[in-house]
Image 1 (cartoon, rainbow, N blue to C red):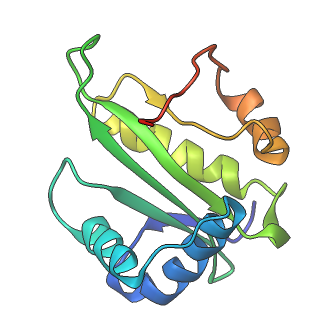
Image 2: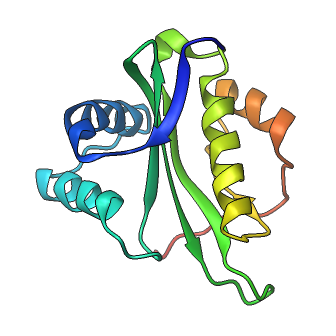
Length: 148
């Protein structure tokens, strides 16, 4: 896609990052207090290798998507693995390659970091995203549980 740039999140992105992340959370019927936004953005800018990383998708200079990911240890591998936690594209750019480009950027970052695996979760009802995920990932039979 011409004019699409995927780049690391910087301090100047805070307002647009917040807009995008709030829209992502709204899709999942979630609201968070301001201190969570502040802590999350601070972590994205931090230098702790075990903290979150993030990228912004810009289309013709306009922020249109984001991705958050982190590396963590895994008992089944020597190397850290990569968990892609949040992925969002503005509704008006869905289906144009923004989501794919963000995931591929995480794949590239994971490869550069020596992480042999990238994984993520989504809700069953997320049909639009799952259409993309089915083309660039492998659906697993795992079922997630949360503490009651």
